[in-house]
Each structure stands twice: as structure tokens, then as C-alpha cells.
Image (cartoon, rainbow, N blue to C red; front, side, top):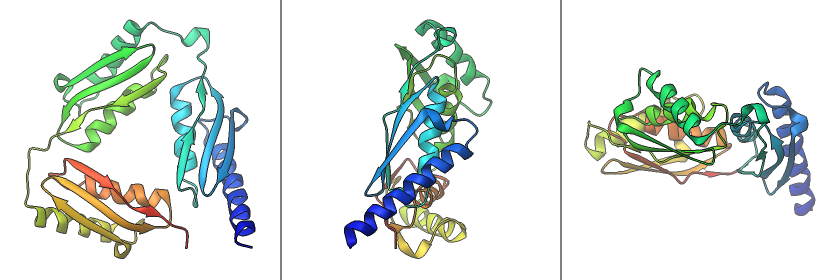
Length: 226
């Protein structure tokens, strides 16, 4: 009986992931295949840009019941979208320079066979995220490795940081703060506990990153469907 229930749940999640893909205008649902086992969604097929592959992955993560996503979608660039690594590197540099909130002098760009690697240091997590977002949508990009490190200037005490993060979790409408525990050591924050969806897990992580002085967040929260 338990096996049948789990199977029905996986089939339900699969249908909802497919519906979410149809809902997302950035992705053509007939490009993506979806299989689900034990809450893990496996995406297959091919798309013509890295931004579509990323969008499909995010769409799957938004579905309640999905505990993890395996993104096996291939990128097959149309001939018109193919660019040399030098062209992609130049475009990536321009994209980063045009973003007013990024310390471009602290960010390095390397491109190999269409794969962009970002290195360097920024003060805030949102700057690291913005740098990746700026380059992943560029034509010709096949993937992005974001190795930028967050080095905050502000260094509050662990107790102060813990209180601020716990308060942020309580304020968030998307998280159940009572199910999440926060541990702080230096600028490293560890989150533990259980939540009901991957989206809630990511919301808790974002709440932690929003606190001044956070250099790293280790998100050990487990997604568990009650």
C-alpha cells in the first residue's frame, strides 16, 4: 500500500511539473521530458539556450513535493547563436559592467567552450547572484560556474547574526520558522530542520543571506511532505 501511495504521489508531482513547465513562458513544454521517483524530478530533452535549461530547472523546483531536481537537459545551440569564446567573454564583461550594483573590478570572467566561469569577491550574496544572472542569458552560453566568494565588510557577533536571521524567518510569510534552527559560527550560517517544499527551503536560505555579515550559508534543511 505504501508503495502504491508513493507511486501515485510521484505521478501527481510529474503532472504538476509538466503543468508548471507549460505555465512558464520561457520554456516550451514539448522540449522537456519529466520523470519523478521518490520526489526527485529528472528533466531530459534539449533546448536552444542555457537560460531555458535554467528556467526549466527552476520551474520544477517550484512544484510542491519535489525534493531534488536532476537536470539532464541538453543544450543544442542553433548555428545563428554560436559564438567564439572570445565573443562570449567580451559580451559577459559588458553585461557585468552595465550592472551598476556590481564591483566589476573584483570579478574575473573565464570562458571555455561556451562555459562561463566567474571568480572574485563581492560583499553581498545578491551581487553574486546578479553577476550570474547577467551572463547566463547571453547568446552562446552553454553553462555558468559561479565561484564568486562573498566577503562581507560588516562582521557582527554570532549572537546578533543569529537573532537577525531568526527574526527574518519569522517575518517571512513563506517559511515556518518554528521548524527551522539557525546556528552561527563566525560568518557561516547553518540551517537545519524540515520544511514542506523546496521553495520554502530556498526562502529560508535567502532570509539568512539577507543578514549583514553572512559569508556562507549551509542549507541542511530537509524537504519533507507531511
